[in-house]
Image (tube, rainbow, N blue to C red; front, top):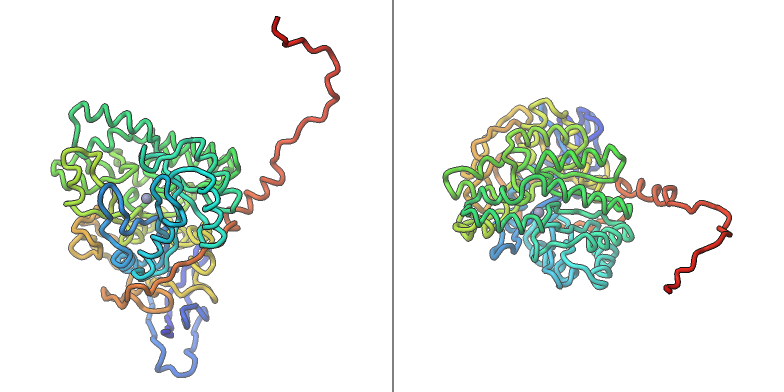
Length: 499
Ligand SMILES: [Zn+2]
């Protein structure tokens, strides 16, 4: 285990910043304070000068799909290359999704994803598990996953009809069980029935290119499903987390619900904050297809700014990526039919830089809010805090040294993804990760990696996250409806017997 002394940086947590040194040993932060002296045997200590730099908790990307088998192929970034890309961007933990097919065991899906990820991950990770169908067995397995496997979040798809989609009754059952076992329910919010119908219409009009993808799932179907999910979750007092909020109208629905006091969290993603859906009308097919994901980027070019404003002001809570990369030959499965283009884009490497450029450099949020939406809030919601998401004595030594003044130009030529296209190509971002420390070891510095596959660990998460469940519990206690006490009706009752 490395011993590291980070000198003279500005340590930024979500609630305060201070100029301080940070001492790391055995993978854990041992001391934070001004002018720390290195303990004995200084030869064994790596000293890093962080003057004029920020020292941040490593980023947490709560939404990735590494080596995901999907739409007849598998996403290109595997758990090795994907987590390397994450580290290069300052992200030291990902939460991926184990997604069983309909009718299949959730536990088996979990074990399968573990077997893929454990030997490959270069940073810590956890797993959400998807509920793609409903039965007593699913219900029981959710409980086992929560109590024995460290899973405290379950995702339901309201889209991908016939594949992953579940209906309102199944949502109600899944949300009820999440509530029972202390998990947080997550939804992919789009109206899958409407999309299926609109798709027939768009194809019948002779529209087979990538623009058809957005045309058959306009933002109304996202906003409608978002409101429906919130309504169902609230009816059983279950906390809800809406993944990849892509449109202004869906974001407004979440903001309204939060202002009504509902326990709901919204996650915009790097793609939605950094670019827009005008690309679907690009003349070059491969360029347009490379931007396909669901819900789609929105053609309204004011969308990214709008989402960032809501993120800055706590209407939205965290930032993910939905990193699910496919190269152009894979995208070409849908060259004659947009419905066959594998859904997914990059994001895990550039998320924090996009967020800094569009959020902090633009003056919308400060460095503390940046840490909150890049790391701390995800740690709190998914019950990893304060081991993750904070620099304090006892926290995991997942740290990024961040140069807020430096700039870098995003390009597929220099990124660390397994594909040769980057949806943020050419964007110049302030905010550059200079050194990334994962599990107390310098894993990335000045463009060079020092990682080995399998060095990351699976992180178990306890149920009943305080951040989410304190309000839920209290509501259960005080908000139950009670019957009105009244004298029994003593009058006459008509006979209902049929003559
Ligand atoms: Zn996803």
